[in-house]
Image 1 (cartoon, helix red, strand yellow):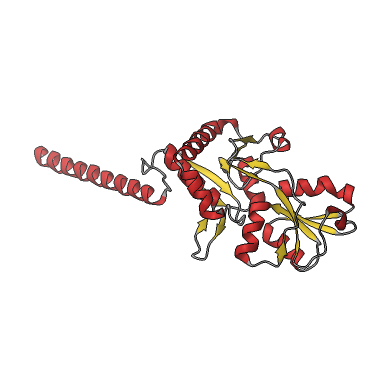
Image 2 (spheres, rainbow, N blue to C red):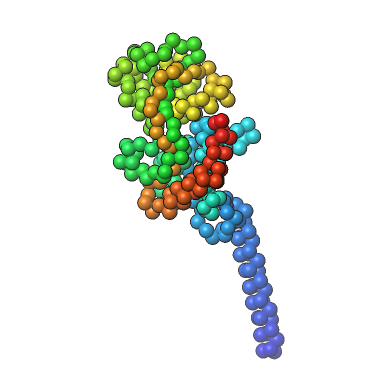
Length: 269
């Protein structure tokens, strides 16, 4: 009788172990399927959370196939593949993306963020620059505004906490115009198109792409741009230095092997 009970118990225990093993494998398989991986590695590896903007064409935007694409999107994918790390890219909008990194809900930010001293002083830690861009004033088609002097007594639309906003604010007192702040680029553009603002300020490559591909009734006057500064990947916590180091190493590698130029030409050539 004791032998029979022992045999039954052993069978039950074996079945439990088998079921547990199957359950673990199913969970592992599910994790592999739902976790964005750049290297096809183990699902137990760290997945970095990267925040970005929603519309900053051609650096991040949704195309006609409803795919999230752009220079920043492709550069991050190429760098992650080169360095063998996994990441999840979250399209949050500029303000929300910055807040997510500040609060620790995201590990890093890639969103056409200009490397500038004010941000460094406030705790931003930047990668090497990955694209140099200037900011430009933009007016509606047919506008008679051709110089900064023509803006006297008028209003200029800017996007919150951007290099373009800084550029406009640095000139407003000298040239006698006011500034209105918006949360996103498309709304800022519309304010100019509708005639509520005489001009807006945007990064030059973004504005060129938006006018060309979006058919916007806007134009870029000559001689109303800044000197320019590089974009950088950013972290706001020194504990994320590993991620920044991998970004820098991967950026150097894809510049050396030609992948970087391929991505830039895809969107800007």
